[in-house]
Amino acid sequence: MLLAAMTLVQDAAALEAAGRYADAERARRTRYEETQRRGADSVATADAAEKLADNLAMQLRLADAEPLYRRAFEIRLAKRGETHGDTARSLRQLAALAMARGALTEAEALARRSLDIQRTASPGQMELAWALNALAEVLAAQGKAFDADPLFNEAVTIARQAGDPDLAILLNNRGNNFYRMATATVIPPLFRRRAGATRSVVAPTDMDESGGLDPIRKRSFLAQGRALLDEAMRLFTAASGADHPDVANLLNGLAAHYRAAGMIAEAEDRYRRALAIKARFLPPDNRDRIVGEWSLGDLLATRPGREAEARTRLRAAMNGAMVSQGRFRTFDAAASQELRNYAPVFATSIRVAWRLSLTSAPPAR
Image 1 (cartoon, rainbow, N blue to C red):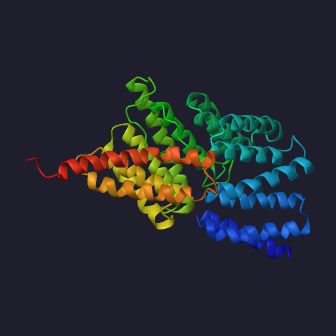
Image 2 (tube, rainbow, N blue to C red; image 1 turned 180 degrees about the vertical axis):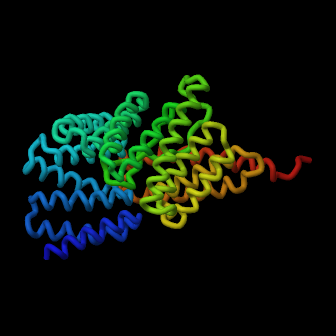
Image 3 (cartoon, rainbow, N blue to C red; image 1 turned 60 degrees about the vertical axis):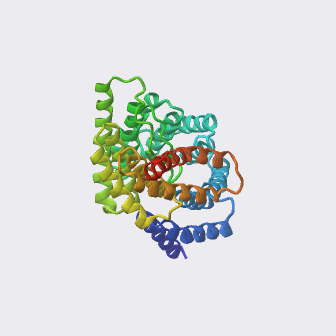
């Protein structure tokens, strides 16, 4: 029985590592149900609930993941106590969920509580790195990119020293934070990893924004960000191959950096490569896929003569966004937050359609 359970967990982990999150769900759910039968309030049940919730979070099914994360937290608090590292991990998972709902004050309180525990429980270890990352992501979501950067940097340093394979995620997050600092942009975090180990994904933004930075400093930030993303790309590609969804998101982030630096051809190339990978792996209503269509469409909308393809890409993003809203049971705060994030897709699409209507309209008599 123990060997079968271990095999089940290993199979699920292998599927998740390959980006096959939905395929791994059945194994995670079976393991959770088995532990519940043996002891509903056991530490093993908390661990299995967390792993199943991680899987659902990777699929962006946050409403389904939240009760499982809360169950894991309740068991750990009762069994492990307030100051245990496992309790701290549950707190940062709850912080990530609160951030996804747009409840940033709640998210910050949970993330700070987690970090305080983790600094004592796991000094110099990856659990501390993830706690630092969680608080940094909350601060960045509040528009405090410069306050977040030292936390991102400390997390990267810990991961480097530990030689941890998840260094690439933390490099991605700090690289994207340089983009935030250069462009005064709030980049929404995206799961596609367990909650609390969240990574950020860059969506299109107003390229005129510079946060009051002088051009030299802006270029420096963008160059530093690209260097971190390039390093993350090498690590991800070596570990998972060139066609993994995480590689696609790194390409998307690199494209945004190039676009902000005025390197449009380089940006378009990476947006196209990213979208080609996403189209092979992800359904049209997946947030990563929506961001890929939106990013390329938004760039093409700025280039004369490319409006027709821009409209096609933006329409695909709009359709995916509307289908994704159906994942919410009610139009709650999280649904409203997601719809606000997608509002620029619709606005840009309308502008492109207007320009196309003007160019195709018959001459006035």
